[in-house]
Length: 350
Image (tube, rainbow, N blue to C red; front, side):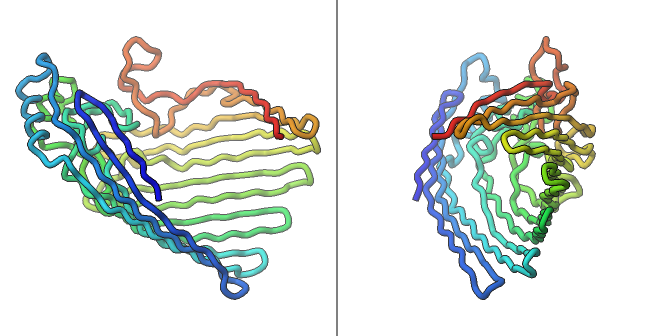
């Protein structure tokens, strides 16, 4: 059982969000080839907000209308959130295992998605330069999940691909608002097309894969691949802020006391973007990293490396939008990824 209170003071009013819950997990074998896992979680989520107001300078007629709408609404909200998971593993041969899983998952709205009463850019990490307003009528998200995986382990190699599909009812995403007071206020703030958090229907599907190959006794290749496709089910559009195909490939050389790795990280272009959210496309990129470690004596390990060795300028699709004037990045442009960086660390075990 867990009790996680969360209290926030913002714009002069009090927000409360409390969550209490518990979970159960069970795993067992039957026969020589079958294993199953079962899990269930329940959370009770309660949220509330006090009355809102603003300074006289900001409380124009549009802001007053939004304030009165918010204060006149029921702000004391609650949800019963259930997650149920079942997984089945079948050892097909000594080297091959088949995995199958189904789940039903839910998510309660966050306090920003509910209680932003003025169009603001405080969007819990979206940082996309758009103005958002909350929605006190939001339902919880409900996702039905199915996944199928295969794992093969040989004497010198390992590969584990997994495909998945999620159908999400009442997926929460910002969509254009029809609240005229919000549009008027946001227009005065420089954004004539504010978004409101709303429930839409969505689906997500894709593939993950891990791969390892011991090429020679001291040389190995590792790879991680991920692809997700997100689409709206209620209209013909893509989901907002879905990353493109990404991967990491590493070549490692290992000795008794030290190891070194050359690693490439890549992302494909993302042109499957949300028209509803006026989302911009991003180009593909690849960066190169080097790192290694040395085991000194019995308990100490020294590690060092360099990320983005060639100091490549790139922009990850999920990065935020710059809002700061007089900087190296134009206002409204996507923020670049980190440039070249060096690191070193010492680990000591006792």
